[in-house]
Length: 59
Image 1 (cartoon, helix red, strand yellow):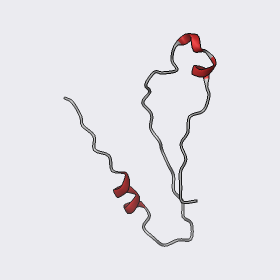
Image 2: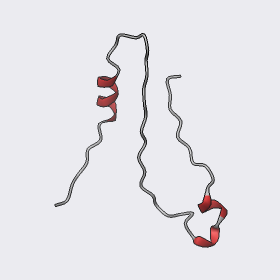
Image 3: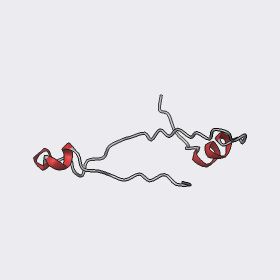
């Protein structure tokens, strides 16, 4: 409760070192679902405010 842990795990990149992908950068997205059944409180607004990320777009 009260925390989310994100940690790397082994995968194909670890099992096949000859592909030389171990140190490669990777983009990813973390999608989280928050459920609070039976609770009448706005949990979205404070979470959104804490996680707002500034993004830039090149055109």
